[in-house]
Each structure stands twice: as C-alpha cells, then as structure tokens.
Image (cartoon, rainbow over all chains, first blue to last red; front, side, top):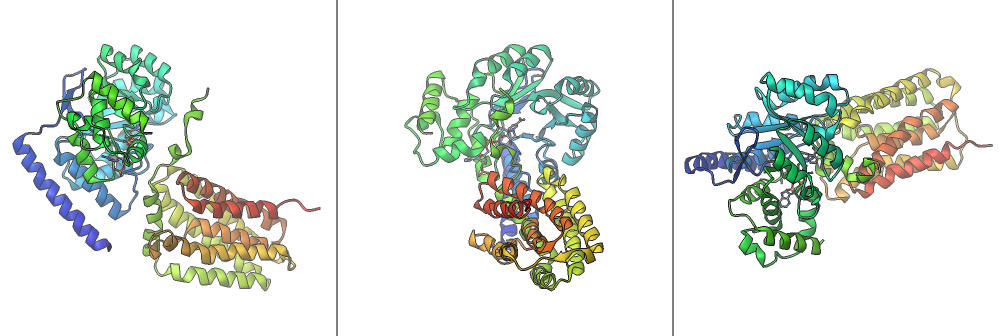
Length: 305
Length: 215
Ligand SMILES: NC(=O)c1ccc[n+]([C@@H]2O[C@H](COP(=O)([O-])OP(=O)(O)OC[C@H]3O[C@@H](n4cnc5c(N)ncnc54)[C@H](OP(=O)(O)O)[C@@H]3O)[C@@H](O)[C@H]2O)c1
C-alpha cells in the first residue's frame, strides 16, 4: 500500500478514535479499575507496555501507527503507559503520540530509572519526563533492581518533593525474586512490577501475597510472554469455558486469568495494533473467573503449548 | 546460577524486525539518488584497486566509512538500538585508519593474483549484487534494499574484499573493524531470526581465514 494511502487510513483511525473518546466519556467507561493501595486512587486495570512495539525511532509511518494505538487505548478508557530509558526511542515516541493526542487527561505515566551510575538517576528521570512532555511523571520504578540501593532513597526524596507521585521496582520472568521480596519487605514501595501469566506463575508463591500484605500495587508485565503465548495458542480453538469466561480470544482469556488474582492492580500488554489494544482493554470487566475456572484456564493453556 | 543464564537471544533485541528493515527504506529515500550511485562507485574502486591505484581506493573507502557511521549508524540506527551508538567510534576509527593508510599508499602493494583475489571478488559481488536483492527476495520493497556505501553490512563486506587485495600488514589491520561489524551484524540478525545473518558470518569467516598467519 502506498505511504499516502496508509497515512490517510491512519488519519481516519485517529479521527474515529477521537470521536469514540467523546462518546465513551459521555457514557462513562465500564472498564474495570483497581485502587492503588497506598492512596486509594483508582486506575484502569489494563495498561499499555512499550517495549519493542513503540521503539520505532524517527520513522514517520510507524510513529503514526503508534499514535493510533495510543488513540485507541485512551478512547477505550486506558490510562497507564509503561516505558523505560532502556526501550530505545519508545519514550520519545510516546511523547510524540501524547502531543498529537493533546495529552489525554486520563494518562498515568509509569517510567523507570535504569542506570548503574546512581548519581545519574535524577537527571535520567528528568530526561524521561521531558521526552514524555508531561509536567510530572506519575510513577518511577527501579528497572530490574539496577542500583536499587542508591536509586530508591533518591526516588523517595523526589516523591516527597512532589516531583513524582509513586515509587516502585521491577523485575521480569522470575529473576531475582529473593532480593525482590526482601526489598518489598523493607522499603515503603507504592508499586511492584513482575511477570505473571497462566504459564509463569512463580509470583503466586510469595510476591503476589506479599504485595497484598504490604499494600503495594502490582503491575504485571509480559502477560503474553512477549507474544509467544498468543502466537502458540492461536491455532487452537478456545475451550468450552470461553463463553462462561466472557473471552473472545486467548489473549482475553489470559488477561482475565491475570486480573482475577486479587493482588493484581494493572496488567500492561504491549501491542503495535489498535485492534489488539481494544481487545485487551475489553478483557477488563468486573466479572472475572473464580479459582476453579482459573485452574482450568491454566491447565488448558499449558496443555496446548 | 547467574541471572544471565535466564536470558534468551531475543531478550536483547530492542526493536521489531519490521522497524529495522524500514530503516533502509527511509535511508534510501533520504539519500536518493545515492543508492543508484554507490554501487558503480564501489565497482570503480575495485577496478582501481586491481590496477594498483591504491590511494583513491583507500581515500574513498575512508569517506564511505565516515559517511555510513555518521548518516546510518549514528543518524538512524542508534535511535532504535542504543547499543549501535557504541559502534559509531569504530566507524570513525576505521575512517581514520583508512585515511592514514591512503597517506601511506605508496608502501601498500597490490597482491599478486591468488585465490585470495577470487575470494575478495566473491565478497564484493555479494555486497554489490546479492545485498540489494535480499529485500525484494524476502518480500520487502525494492526501496528497502541494503546498498553498499549506505548500509553498514554490505559496506563492511565489500571493504573486507577490497582490503584483501592489498598486501600490507596495515591492510590486514584495517579488516579488523569490518570483521567486528560483521560479527555484530550476524548476532543482531540471528536474534531477529533472519537467515540473512549467514552472509556477514560467512564474510567474517573469510576475513579470519585470510588473516591467518602464513608461514
Ligand atoms: N523488567 C521490566 O521492567 C520489564 C520486563 C518486561 C516487560 N516490561 C513491560 O511490560 C510490557 C509487556 O511485556 P512485553 O512487551 O515484553 O510482552 P507482552 O505484553 O507479553 O507481549 C507483547 C506481544 O503480544 C502481542 N499481543 C498483544 N496483544 C495481543 C492480542 N490481543 N492478541 C494477540 N497478540 C497480542 C503483541 O503483538 P502485536 O503487536 O501484533 O499485537 C506483542 O508482540 C512491556 O512492553 C514493558 O512495558 C517490563
């Protein structure tokens, strides 16, 4: 398809998204929200990741596509976007999209600090904020616990000074859970982020229950194992429970499995497609699977991999 | 157990393959009509090298490396792969090394016809002819072709070839950076799941074989 036609199509999508936004605002969103334990602030339970998908550099066409994903995300009531200085140009691409969309009011910015040189932390946070183009970042997390001992006190200071609202830490794919758990016990964190899905369930043993005890909000990353889960499940028809679960796709079944865990606050799938972002947000409804159904989902997913 | 053992090659890939391949499309568009001029230029360099005109060959190569490092690696690729930013000084170093060698050109002799010439010829043909075809052959637009003198992989491969024609320890040293780049390129393409990684890997193997100590 020639570039100009694709651009025109995207422009159409953006306008449609904007119209849609006003209509959902009028109706009130039905999207499931969860409270951040440390403040009671509600946050929509499905967010948006940006690893790989938003790292498109200066490519005008791909930037436009990312903007369309963000437009669809906000139009359907999404709020939290997660990024990191590690994700190449993702921060700049998010900033570009936010500017194009007129800085949607609902935005909840989740950033990270990622540098081994502790003294660079605050400058890096400031650089991230400028790339997003927002007056203040909502959440800053220590990425993969890198130099966490040095970063956390500084982040707490910045929070006290009102330069950010929440502080957290992240890991993924089960790495360093022992240390992660210790930091959760010792530090007054608002947020923790780690991997959880029907296949990667280590977090159920300690991290998820501990987050609940400690009153820490949980962000779930890699719900689809970076797309490996959805890709491998795709050829298989959905089992009979899909209707009962209210899931039209495997992606929705996985998200509903994750959201049904009471300790989970927000799950942040990444996508480069506006239709997928809508599908993912639509998975966040109030009626979620009970324990018995969750066990069946996990077993059925595992059996098909 | 070190946590590093839990990483897979894909974990180090920061960008989607589509984003990577589109870099070449945007680059060719931005530098049009250089994509049409660079391959004949490199062919000319080959002819000059075979005729023993070493100075213009090395000077032109120096410019090409400076240009690819500045315009593509730093100007385009580093935006999606911060690790590529660390390779920019390598391109500058290579350009400087080539310029220095050009200045010492009278001392660089052209090698006698040997099997190395044929290998060099193969590398140059791969860079010149095979590389531009890879995009259309793999379902990407013609405009996304990787062109020698604009894209780093064919540039590195052609440079290894041209430098194999020269007989001097200096020329051997000048194959180090292109070989390093071939290794990085092969690694990147492998993590992207692209078969194309075999080409820079093959060039690297040839460079290493050609660079082996004789006697
Ligand atoms: N240590 C850390 O702090 C850390 C580590 C990992 C991840 N994270 C965060 O967590 C986010 C999510 O993790 P992730 O990006 O690694 O992987 P993920 O969200 O599990 O998977 C992303 C992939 O799933 C596909 N996908 C999304 N929605 C889909 C749908 N409805 N149907 C089918 N496929 C779908 C996407 O492909 P399409 O583009 O085709 O939709 C994309 O390739 C990251 O973006 C990042 O923000 C943080």
